[in-house]
Length: 385
Image (cartoon, rainbow, N blue to C red; front, top):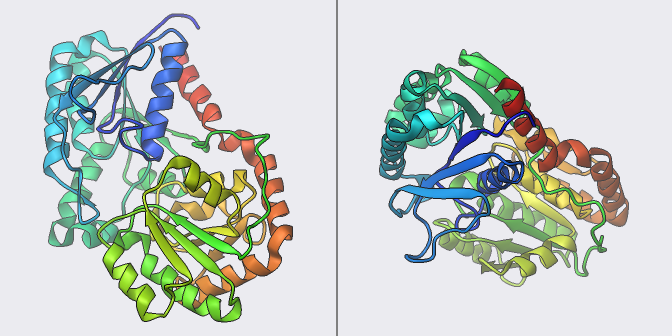
């Protein structure tokens, strides 16, 4: 390393107070940069208890906005990211000149707009992760009549001079179509590399696992309908739906309506080890989501030798990580019948498909590991600096 840099990482959430792929990415990035001797500041929202701030070796964690509920009925609220963007703007106005690099996420967009506004005055370089680029149609579905405003803000953010990083080819193409002002770097890895984990056989009875939020775009209603069909072909099939959210009561009603109370359980949020145990010996992981920016669950399942079943959709980048019949299946079209067929095929292929999944992961573990992406990012800081 030629010299140490002052780097500001900006994200409104911090792992493990908030759990998600982006949170893990920025925590790992901060720790890696600090371990390499760089001076790292992490701007975020307050998420911890008073008097018990985060303690990350070599990283200064600064809250620039108060604690807030980020979601309402499964959708991001507008006020918290605006307050966070304002906090970022104030911090960079005072301290921006001390940073060589400001590294942040495109969404929510106000922090990127703030960093872009002060970039020329402060002299730092901007590195921005675009986990997703939403289409006009998705913005319309998400915000209704205000969808055009979200689309325009996203478009403006693409015009901020930056080095952009994407984690799927779907969103790389969309970002290019926006007319990005800067270079684009494709990073394929976001998962913790696992090379020597214990590979279990699928439990008996065969059990499907879902883990995630229970919100409309995750399409759990579609999964329940598919399980009703699949259960007729595989009578001992079971399913566990981990997580919680505004759709939970509606899903429970649908389960009861289909007479599946003895087939599907919903334990809510559980301890990490319980989830790990359930995933490791599941017959498959199912993720019927209409929108995924990457598809981390596919890689995590494959690392355990567990096939993944996902659903084709215009906004689902996870399809890039599934080779049908190799490490899972893609239900296309997105119908209960197609999803049920994928579930049935997974159960019937059994250990043969699990072995193909293990082989697929072994062949792709390096490119899919978060370490490979971190190395690319950290090296680029030094070269460009």
